[in-house]
Structures are given as C-alpha cells and as structure tokens.
Length: 230
Ligand code: SF4
Image (cartoon, rainbow, N blue to C red; front, top):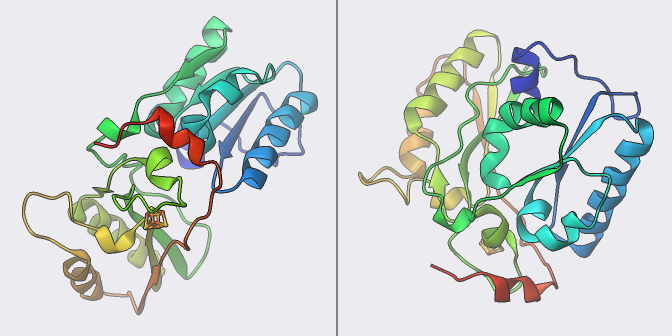
C-alpha cells in the first residue's frame, strides 16, 4: 500500500508526525490485536483532527459492527479493497463522508496483486505468493478475514524476483497465509515446489526461505455464526 501511495506522489511519514491521511492496517488474530487496532485508530485522529483516518484489513473484515462505532474513522476498507486503496482514499478526500467498503471475502477467487515493490533492504526481499486458507481450523479466524486460497500468478512472482535480483537482492523470503496451499486454486497443476524450482533458476538468487504462519488462536468464535462456509 505504501508503494501505491509513493507511486502516486504522496510523501510517507512516521505515524507520530502530523499527516493528512492515516492508514491503519488492522489485525484481528487475538482480542489484544483488536484492542490495539481500535486504540491506534483513535490516536490517529488525535494526531490531526482534520485528517482522513482509514481502517483497512482483517479486523475491519470480521468486525464491521465494532468498527462502525468508532467515530474517528472516515473510511473502512476490507481485505478485497486494499488494492484499490488510492481510489477510495481520494474519493473520501473529495466527498468528505464516512464510507465502508466491504465485500464478502469468501466469494473472492482472484489473488489481489499489488505488483512489484521497491525494496529498501539491500540483500533480502519478502515476496507474498498467496492469500487465504481453506483449512478452517476450529480456533482460527484467518479464513473468515482472508477468505479462500488465492495464489499469485507464477509469471508475476518470477518477474518481480528477476527484477529485484538485478538490483542486488540475493535472498527471497516466500510468504503467504497458507504457503503450502500455493497453486491449489490453479486449473493447471502447479504447486509450491514448481514455483521454488523456477525461483532457484533465477541468476543472482542465492537463498530461498519459506515463512509459514504460526497457528493463530482467537477466542472470538462467535464471528463464525455470521458467515456461511462455502
Ligand atoms: S491455523 Fe493456519 S491452517 Fe488453520 S485455519 Fe488458521 S491459517 Fe489456516
């Protein structure tokens, strides 16, 4: 999301600085992260009462009713709407009214690709290759916040890694919500191992790491009542 705003000419500042727009990418893996998300959204408006405060991401996706009670928020975007954040923020600035954009992630079948990112680290890059999870473990809220497995197209991943390897990046960290499910949603058989083998052939890449999600515990199972598992 930072890259999208940078490309459009916005200046990125630290949270503590006075800003015109605050974007809070919320988390919902525990009750503590929900609370922190609410606190920081309120804090943003205190930093600059004239700013546009935008709540994005997982907590927004699963707790619309709680988010609606926070007066400090001007715009709420769920998991699917992140890739169009610039358009929604500029509409919020123009029309100055509170807005909530939230699609049911369970219907989402396409990976939301943000495109290539400019990396600030000199030798390592984190590459997200998939989103969502189909496992629906009893204690975990992730499938309700992120939806079903959607894999990023291999050609887009390989293009990004080839670009960054030319800029001196030697190590890639492959990540996602449930990385082992990579490719499960493709019509033609193409799995994580196929992707790794192709990455391994790219000149300049010396190390490939896999980053897996830890099991996520969330005791707010009641959210499940509001969603049908398809
Ligand atoms: S714990 Fe992991 S595998 Fe289970 S539903 Fe959550 S993200 Fe999926």
